Image 1 (cartoon, rainbow, N blue to C red):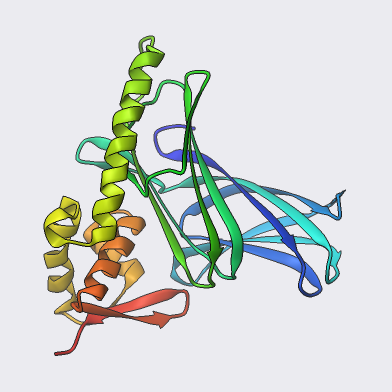
Image 2: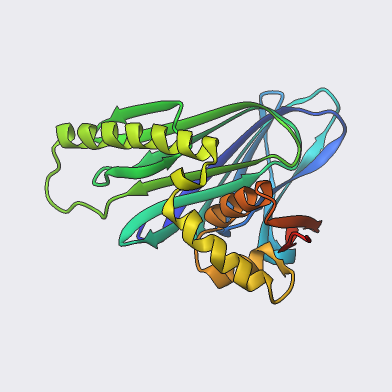
Length: 263
């Protein structure tokens, strides 16, 4: 929408396992002007939407609707504006998004729509399942099946500043090709988890994290503020450090308490 704000739409398609009158969507990012449409068994119903900030600056969108009974098929569409998803990293823009699933999900997909006048650059993590050019715009899509409760998903996509002059679609497609190939290799590097092959921000920030943790345990949300990088980057970094045995994370409400690994 502008240099710092995006329009976000979340669509949930579910079959109720129990009686429901409310659905809550949690976001680590600031939310403005939420709106929702709810369909129960194909019939659109009135939904009341409210927003509240809970522990750890997590935003919660509450969608209230008429009672849903067990076995009812429900579609919920939530739209709102988000801030904090786009950062400036080494002179380039970067879309950085993190989501944690509060319940098991059979099928999940995410689509990132890049408007006309923007070009995708590396990194792209993870590599998209689908890449499509449409009317001088670009759509990236990721999908995942059988997600467990508590599972996390991260997206990192670099992109250029807005292009003021007329942009040749052929150039866009070339950039997309390079971005796709770069994203593929970035994803492979990430999966391999080899220190010599990880992105530079992981190498440099490990020492910063250790220095901070020497002063004592700290909430992951506070660590994000101290490192001054995106939540997604911090989550990836901490997971890498945890697997290497450098740190450990203990569940603390909807956040984690991070501390150095003893011994």
